[in-house]
Image (tube, rainbow, N blue to C red; front, top):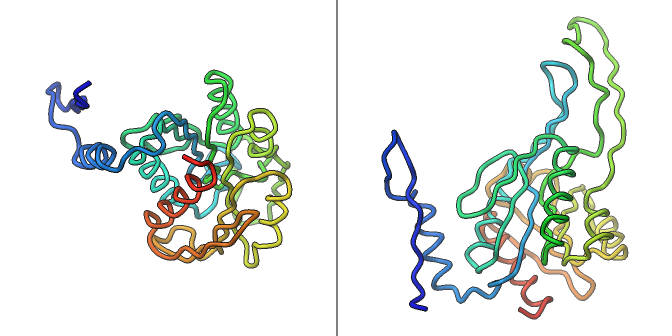
Length: 238
C-alpha cells in the first residue's frame, strides 16, 4: 500500500469542512511515531461518574477526565485501536457514553463481550464506589438529610477475571503505596499512584508501580500518559 490516510470531513451547517486541527495533528503524529501498538486494542475508562441523589442532585468526584484524554491521545498516536467509555467525546477514538457507574460497567462488559476482550485495559475513570438510594423528587433544604449509600461492584476486578488483559489501574490516596501493592498482588499489571491534589490539575507528580520497580513521573498529563505507555510497551514486549 501507499500508506495514505484519508480523513473524514467534519460537517457544519450541511457543509463538509476540513477536520479539526487536533484530529489532523494526531493522525500526523500516528504516521511518524512508528506505531508500536499497531493492531493492539486499548480500552480506557475516563472521567467522573455522576450518581443521582434525587431529581436534581448528583454524587460525583473532582475528576476532570484530563488523564483519560491524554491516555487516549497517546494510545492513538502509538497506533492502537482505542475505545473510551466516559461522558465526553475525544477525537480519533471510539467514544462510548456512560454517566453512572452502572452504565460504565455495562458499557465496558458489553464492549468486551462483543469484541472478545481487549489487549490493554486502563481504568482511569473515578468510578463510583457507592450509589445513593435515589430519592424521588427533590430533597427538601433547610433540615438535616440522610443519604443511604449502597456499595457497587468493582469493574476492574470483573474485567481482569473474565478477560485477562494487561491492566493499568490508578490508586489515589494520601499514602497509596500499600493499597497499590495489594492491587499488584491481585494481578494488576501497573498501578499509577497519586494524591488527591492531582485531581483536576493540568500536571502533577505520580509514581508508576509494577512488580519490578517504581518509576517517578512528573509533569503534564500528556507527559504522564507517555510514561505509562512506555512502560506498557516495555512490559508487553511491543
